[in-house]
Image (cartoon, one colour):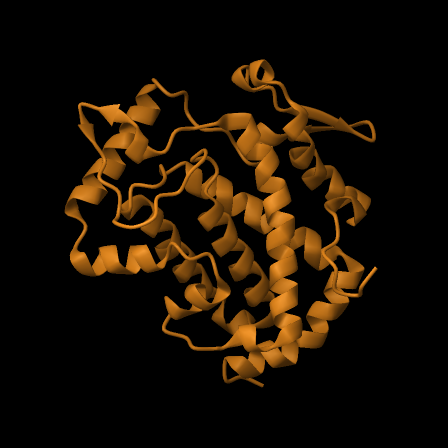
Length: 249
C-alpha cells in the first residue's frame, strides 16, 4: 500500500473505531429501519448509539422543526448582499476557503504532505457522514413549502439530506487539526467555524440543529486521527510547516 493511501476507519485504534465505524455501517439499514430512527449498532460487543453521539434532527412536523424553519426564513430574508457573497464563497469545502474567510493566506495546499493529510481526514469524515445521512434523510429548508418558501443563495444548490451539515463537520475538522498545530490561534479558528456554519443558514441550505451535529462528527474524526499513531506521526512532521505558514515558529 502506498504510504499516503487513504486508510479505512476500520484501521483506527479499537476504542476510537468503536465510536466511528458504526456510522459507516449504517448504510446497510433498510428504509423502514431508518424511518424508525434505529440508531443502535453492535461492534465487538460494544453498543454504539449514534443518536446520542451526534444527535438526530427534530421530526419534520414538530414545533421544533417549524421554529428552525422560521429562523432560516428570517435569516434569508434579512441577508445583505455582502453577507450573501461571503456565504456563496463558503460553499467551497476547502482548507483554502476556510482560511480565506479568516483573512489568512497561509497557502497550506502548496505543501504536499499537509495537503494529503487534510485530504485523508476529509475522506474519513465522508465515511462517517455517509452512514449518518442514511439514517435521517432530512429535507433542506429551501425544498420545504411552509406558507412561504426559503429563497436559497444564487448558484449551485446542495442535494441530499440536510442533516448533519457536511460544511459544519468540515469546518470543525479543520479547526481541530489546525488548533492542534497552532494552539495560539484556536479562538480564531473557532470564530471561523461559527461564520462558516452561519453561511449555511444564510443561504437556506441547513437548519440550526444540522450544524452542531456536523460539528460533533468533524471533531470525532479529528480526535480519532490524532490518536492514530501513523497519522499522528505524519501530522507532527508537518507541524513546523503549518506554523511557518501562519508566520509562527
